[in-house]
Image (cartoon, rainbow, N blue to C red; front, side, top):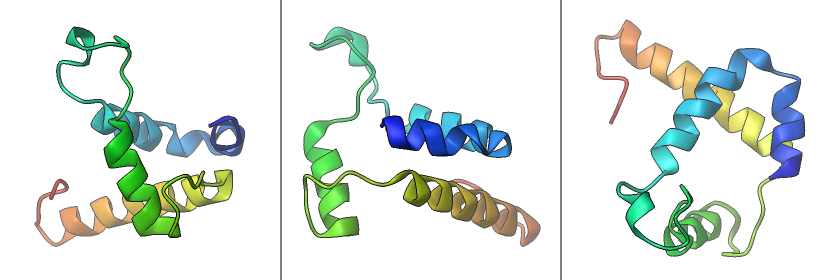
Length: 88
């Protein structure tokens, strides 16, 4: 996580995209279940890491995070240009 934060620090234009991404990872009702922190479900996160990297214990690099956020922002803009929903 530290590598991601350090990589993102050099790209302030991606901060809103990162905040949106983090908000989307937080499960609803997180305050009702231990550990009472807004953390993504571990099983879901392991699944995503396995589908992306082939290893459920993989940790994305800061460069991967920046590349994903750049792609996500461009994709959202493309969908808005063609009249589609930014959320799918």
